[in-house]
Amino acid sequence: MPLTTLMNSVKSTKSTKSMKSMKSLPRASLLALLLGGAGGTALAQEAWGYKYTHGFYSMADSHYAQDANLRLNKDDQVIWIGHYWNPSIYQQTRAGYEHTIATAWGQLTPSLQIASGGFVSGALSGQVGSTNYLIWGIDRTNDKDYYNLNFDPNNAITLGVGTKAMSGAVLSAFTTQTYRLGLGQRITHLVWRQSLEDKRRLTVDLAYKHGREAPDASKVHGTSLVVTYDFDRYFVRAGRDLKVNFSQDNQTRIAAGLRF
Image 1 (cartoon, rainbow, N blue to C red):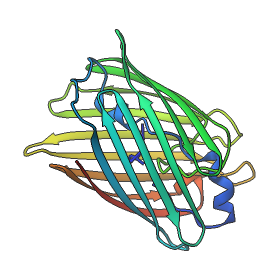
Image 2 (image 1 turned 120 degrees about the horizontal axis):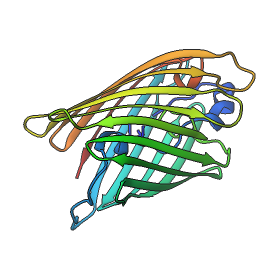
Image 3 (image 1 turned 90 degrees about the vertical axis):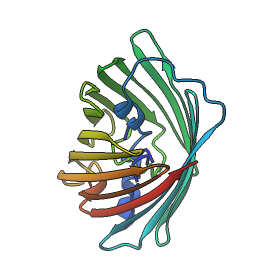
Image 4 (image 1 turned 120 degrees about the vertical axis):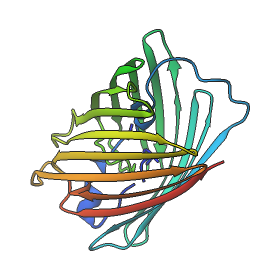
């Protein structure tokens, strides 16, 4: 509910092998659900709010890649548009829309994303409960090449739990696993978000993954750690991902942005 935004969406390619693996790359992020919790209809918002994120991604044997993402939100609607480019390999423009629906039991969020090269993806996610809640989600793509920057598998099911019972904190644990293409990709996240004084917030996302980049590739195991610090309208993020996208590569990524 991953970058989508680095986090709300963040990846880097390296070779023909990496291009081949794009069909197994991640889907629209569940991050807003995972960190926010269910319950209640949002207060009416008079104008659209904006969030801009610029990310930089590096692996040992490739050029630096970049991603620019603009996210617009109003009430229960979100629109985003972004562009990823790696000077030596690949670039792609994407856009998406999601709508969160409050229900008697929690919330439901359908979303749709398209990208240059003919990619189309649809997802449905939700929460059951309020202070303590269940997390679920499912998505499906048309298997076209896509570089989504959330680092969780596409064509996958997500299940997890979350709680807002601790003062000023939101804690969630969830697993995303593919159900198609024979890749056996699975990633489990533990996410902690702590509100601080003076409009500050700290978010830590620790993950463990295993699976294959392609059906004929060797199975890999890897971990990742991403830390985000929000202060007033601004935020910075840094992460290290071992076996990024279930490949043999390790990636360092940083991002910064603002809300306006």
